[in-house]
Length: 77
Ligand code: SF4
Ligand code: SF4
Image (spheres, protein in one colour):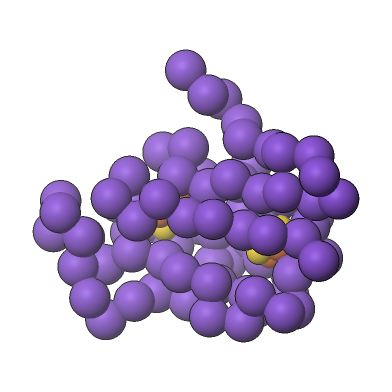
């Protein structure tokens, strides 16, 4: 099963990943991170198909995905 990891303290709460996910895996937390933003989290991880759309959309490189042993992290600079 694909594994999605969100670094909550990199998140700025833009919700792009939530909108991009075709499987409704992600939701916004009621809690805030160290920067004072509501962050996204994997509310329904079992639904993930590993499409990586959420990671592609994230402007803050907060999302990392592992699919069948391959790790995807975009724009890692
Ligand atoms: S990899 Fe695809 S299905 Fe999985 S959480 Fe991201 S956008 Fe949703
Ligand atoms: S796209 Fe990135 S910064 Fe925006 S809510 Fe999702 S994880 Fe946070």
